[in-house]
Image (cartoon, rainbow, N blue to C red):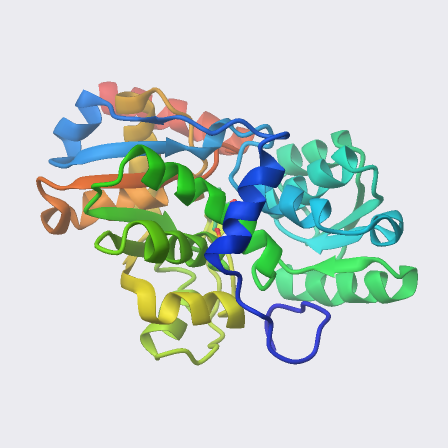
Length: 335
Ligand SMILES: *Cc1c(COP(=O)(O)O)cnc(C)c1O
């Protein structure tokens, strides 16, 4: 089983009505994020790129839309018991941020030796950080135990209708601003972003292709989708934290099954190149996952030539090591 959501039976998929409700809930908490086009980036890619800047969210990633929507939908008694998440980073910050906003206790289980910047951010948001397990799967098992012992709500990183409805607000913004897009490219880990894009496009932009992208070094969601909906496990060997998932998730796979136009794979080096391109052409610091959509456009540029393409820059939480590696790479490139 994947997506330890704590419920039995299939989850109800969110609808566009849920996304519109989430937009009303979020209006008090988050302004819409910008979406800019950069001539240098257009020249580099051969497409008209609309870069959606989720990296400027208060937590540095789009997931905060989901966390706030979920906490806003809990009643007072549920909030008082609190929430537990397991995450390598951005889902954790989203839950911690939302829990702090709504005065709810929050515990986060991260696999041992987490990205120090992300661990620091979670603690700074007032959440309890528990380091347990060698990987996300083991952390998930530990989180389930913590939730059961303390009566807290366990929040899956992807199989949660409220998270997907909240994340869909990013795509409502995209289609409000740019109704005539040829494609939207979305990076995938658990698939909440791509599922949310499918949901919004079905209602607002039925002719726009939603294209998902994953690291070839962690292809579980890709392989699950290609198989027609089996929830497959695959080794996760990617360096790219936001994309490091080892299994397909039921709810997101179901939403992607019919609506996703294509699912591409890129290798980690191509993602690194795209991070550098974002810095050079769009003065934007993206973490690897936040540059994966651009990597897909660069690697598969023929498919998108001359088109209007929204590229999701999903997050900016690059680790200090990652940022230092850039400077080294830049020195080499310049020489
Ligand atoms: C979580 C995350 C992703 C992947 O999103 P899913 O909804 O898990 O598919 C992409 N980019 C960033 C920055 C993330 O934090």
